[in-house]
Image (tube, rainbow, N blue to C red; front, side, top):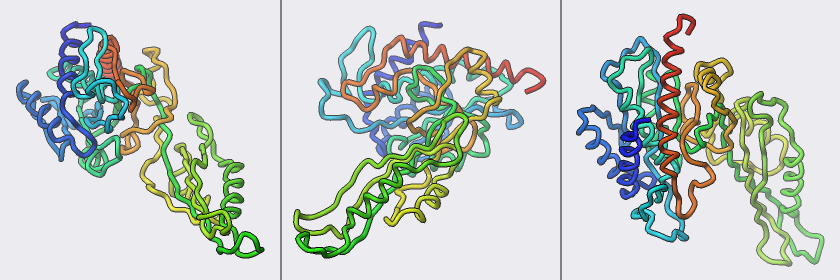
Length: 360
């Protein structure tokens, strides 16, 4: 691997870490990257604070592979031992907010895109740097995909996976449930206890099994994670609220899950959002075939990403480890950035070679 690639990526990442880019506040980081690309004489299409780049010889008759990672970060936790925007310098680590999630994927994709920028390939390359990923904001990939959906055939989503390839990703459905009863004095047999109604519903939900099982993800996972009822010890509660966390598979839409659950419980169910769908790339797709040819470990991701906001086959793959995300003293190893660049270039090289074959 060209050492200059790693040096360029780490230098860029250090600069990006110093520029605050909380979800919805990415304009300064976008400004910097627009100038970064303009200095290289590369045209950037800016949609809000999202950035889209294409190769100069883009050919609409060819399939397009989108390289996507996000510009935004979460807010730093209070337990950082250093300034998350001005971290200590190390020869082996890059510290700072967003270094692992997903700064390393971001700069590795940028360097990989630049590597192929002038090369004519059987597949078009597009680099899409999106915003508001961490907060599922309306100005990020949700908006950007409305522009790109007819241009993109497949994607690699850059997130920290240890360069393993997630071929499926569970969705997310959070439901606020509320049981309604009638208040009364606890010393007398008065009222209808909303807490008991909720407990009956929770017992049902705990035992519920969804019939359709995903070949790649298994069963839909449902967990009740919060409950609240009552105002004081001697009052029968007339309301009890609880929260249901559901991780759907591609076998059900979120709306279908709501339609299954509501008739079976007494509590009123309200979904916080129906858009965080599950994703899976079918066996036999060129992306999965490429991962198999390169002996890349594949798995189903339990966490969500911008994959759920696009409608084409994809893999989620990038340097770093998901367990480090959103933690104090976040870091990425420089050798992981090197492996990220090497892995992306190797993958794209193999994928484009496969598309050169007559049966693809």
